[in-house]
Image (cartoon, rainbow, N blue to C red; front, side, top):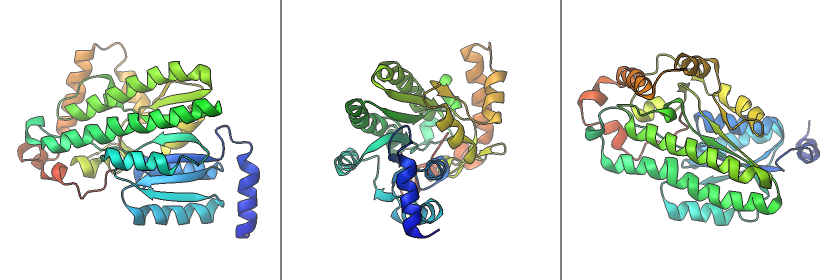
Amino acid sequence: MTDAAKALSHINRRGSLKYGPLALVTGASDGIGREFARELARRGYGLVLVARRLDRLEALAEELAKAHGVAVDVLPVDLSEPDQVEELIRTTAHYDIGLLVAAAGFGTSGPFTRISVATELDMIDVNCRAVVQLSHAMAQRFVRRGSGGMVLMSSLLAFQGVAQSANYAATKAFIQTFAEGLRAELRPQGVDVIACAPGPIASGFAARADMVMGMSQPASVVAAATLDALGRRGTIRPGLLAKALEASFTGMPRWGRTLILSKIMAGMARPDARTAAGTAQQTNTVERSDLT
């Protein structure tokens, strides 16, 4: 198929897309965000891809444009910087975006007292503040247009406190509650919101959080299942592993879940993360990846 034919095919397909022609995906350079971009392109959505590394975004954009004939724009943004998020909002003001996938984030592992407080605060900025800032702007647009969809990344860790990953679990608890509230508020106005709460996923999480994941599933299990559930469910736990872990906790008191998951996290943290100063978490040169 020629490039012109692919573009025409995309134009024809996008008229039947529930959320309009364009989706914005943060954290698109790696892991879950990248898989969401690929799945959305397969479904015919044009894309606005956001992450810190322009080279990775451009490579993905080229891949998706060639494979699916969709329009792809890339915007390098550091979501820990409020001014850059605001600039992203201004830049996309004229785009007909109908779907937001907020997949960017990062985590840490190991003793809270041995991880740089700057890193922990940076995590709150990326995992929570930037999500609220971007969701607020997109929700206003979606309400005005009378339709829209939002995918917010929760986690299996969102439903209880977890030692060795206390701040990360707390950020995901915030997102879980935020998504539940937004869904109830925005649904009558035509906007669908879903919290995606996977278990261990093979993505950039382990490297960024200085962890060893002996048991995980590929990021590809998340995207299709979540998009299929958007508009039908408020929370999804994609993948057999997430479902199995959640089923094993059924009926267990919150303190019991905390105890078990804390032991699991302690076992997954690398020895140097448990005993040293957590230098891997303190660097800002590592790409923030899509996390679970």
